[in-house]
Length: 352
Image 1 (cartoon, rainbow, N blue to C red):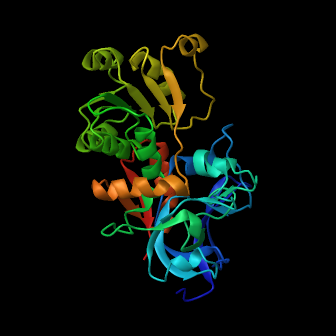
Image 2 (cartoon, rainbow, N blue to C red):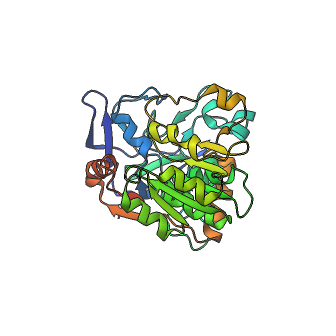
Image 3 (cartoon, rainbow, N blue to C red):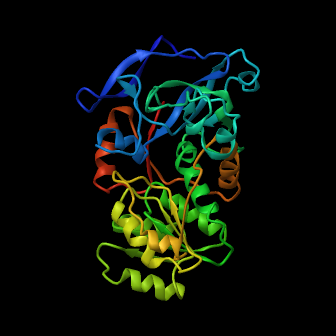
């Protein structure tokens, strides 16, 4: 239980576009909520987008706001409602960041909580306080107890990056032995490589950072290419795959990487899976799409209804995020490393 009534939190302030390590009150859970002591909160690229000009629909609410939407922790107390009462003090849990939605309408079940019919959805870490703080309240309906053997201090990246990468790979619908390009082998992509190999696909890793490519090889990639330094990478991918990859899953925030993808996708049957969100809107050749050169699809990257299969698959196949840990006051440094493409795997704040 908390020893006091306040806690430390890394909060983004729109007024100066900076982070501030503030002291704020510890929240209390409502009937449908759990109070969780955060064990680990990990950094996602969309957290960093708060500091960047973008037109991709990030909506802020309160100001300042605690950033972070990817975490795991231990239940401290529960609300009095039926759903919350299914959890108990001491449970190791992971959770997703969409709150105030109904979780039960067709969009919530089959599309994404962002499009809930109530129109009330908010995202922790953006429009409500997120997870780079010592305690947080989460909705019990978007929370699950970790599988046996899963470490609560390293599981955090699975509750955004893991669920996103798993469904980005699985939703391609490939058969074993087909070729998949994982575009961007960092925080999301290194997990994508692991999921793709566990599903029986042949994998080509693409990135502009050699360290990320080394990570991809450790995760099982069959081939890797630096798309910045190897001028012939597109030709090589087409030759290796005998016509192009069956799916290119783009985990990056690079518009150029999206522009490059059609050249390596197998004509007529190949798929471009959109996961990463660049600052600028994507530009697609309408003739290519109209004539069936390749298909474009997005992946439902994380709701309470598709969270559990991703986490259970991770536990079954021993898929783990490669996590570098820091202290809460080091979050600005973590952001600098991410922006400089000097981070491999995932970076997270581990709380005592």
